[in-house]
Length: 137
Image (cartoon, rainbow, N blue to C red; front, side, top):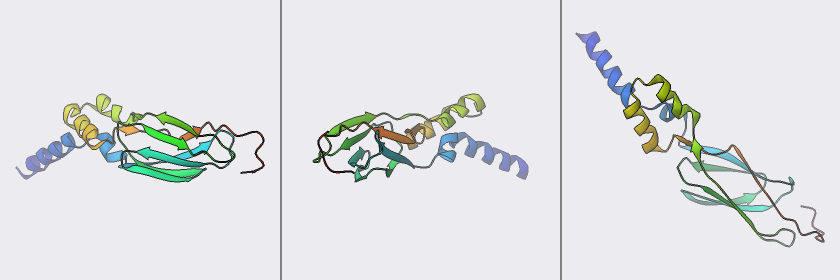
């Protein structure tokens, strides 16, 4: 009887925990760089707010089905640029479909926690440089 109780408890726990919830963290690091590998000041807007820095810049973003908006600030040598990168479904999320031990509950857990989503590991921002600028950054 004790073994049956442990097996039942294990089955319940496995049915509510999704693969992506176990493997993916709440946040994900994303490297922001420019197409010409020169430094530029960027601002990344995401679910939790904004983060700013100079490229190459590593930003930690919370996983969600919301786009990352990356803006290059205008300076004496760069023109302002903004791009938007959408989240995609993490490959780990699809393991539930193959495993399908408890698809309904575990996939909804992954969706509710946001851990089913992922962003590109690196985002390259196209920067338009001003040609007659003497700044070498």
